Image (cartoon, rainbow, N blue to C red; front, side, top):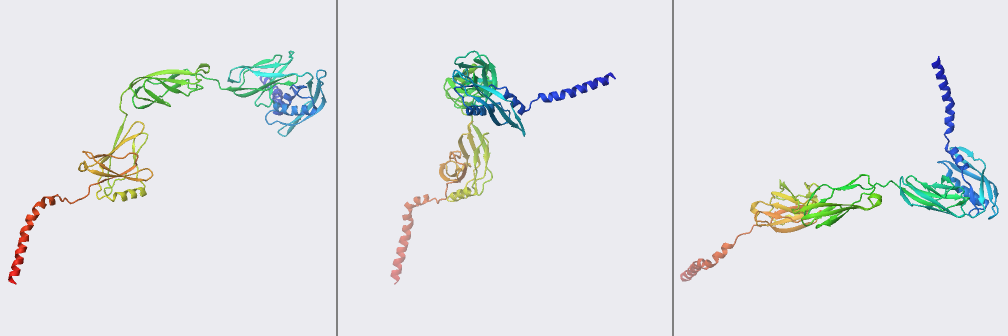
Length: 453
């Protein structure tokens, strides 16, 4: 029974608290009305001293008090008294009507004053930019300040329609805003100051270290410098490299050594160190002599097509060779060019030599030994299908070096079939001896024919 009574009492309390919780959460419309009614409406004679001026000021000023999607429907100035300089304060009363999601609400009657003594306020900020979490100071330089309330406002735009940040009987406050550009101004006895802006960026994270693995550099070879920055969320991470000792050069993050020995380099990140100072660190390497790292790739070529070999060489990033067929148009042009020569010879092997940055140093073709020291025709095509012709002499082992910057080659023998007439020169001296008996024989036969007649 006692347990049942306890449940009843608990349920009653929950029902009783539910409406209280609902009423405690203000709607955007109710919150906007509350903000406007709690605002400061002290104006200054040197800025506003007419009913129309009060209306225009309120129309702009109240926009800063509205919550998201709350519309300022209208403002009514119900009473206005003009101020007289240094003798009589003015005043006004107004109410505002607001709308939110098809619901309208009107503020109560709100009173404001117009100060009769001209007041000049200059707002000053100790910083124009700070990092998130840092503080800065706002100061108001006020003429004839007598210790009254100074109202400081913060806004996301420079139009002075901000929300109240702090009311203080002091001319300065300390602020630590969130990320973004913030605008600040203050009011005192109806006077409004200028607007100052402060840019707030993400908290600065300085570099604690830059590391490089131990490396031995090779002369005349471009080497990447794989630097790592700690911590990995450092605000700045753009490294500028500089050679400070030794014969070497750096382009971007690749170093090329020209002479063996000790090489010293400096890694610098402008503004990346503690408190925004430049961060610098030196590294030392040893460089040794060494030929460029070539990679030789051999490829057996089979079969030939009527003695004509059509091929395209391309070195990719892995320094492999890709062989692709040439276009039909290019092939026809090359075959037509090669048809001017009678002999077509098969190529037995080919290789391309590349360095570590894929520069093709040499394209060699090894011919059959029967073509050693003989003239060879090379018909080649570039990437655009332009045909060129070269006559080359094979080495003593039958090797020829093909022209660079070409994509396709047809190799043909330049040997033509000629009749050897050297024996004719040998016969010239004895031709008369061979012909003389024949001549005498013919002459004798002629005399005998005449005698018979």
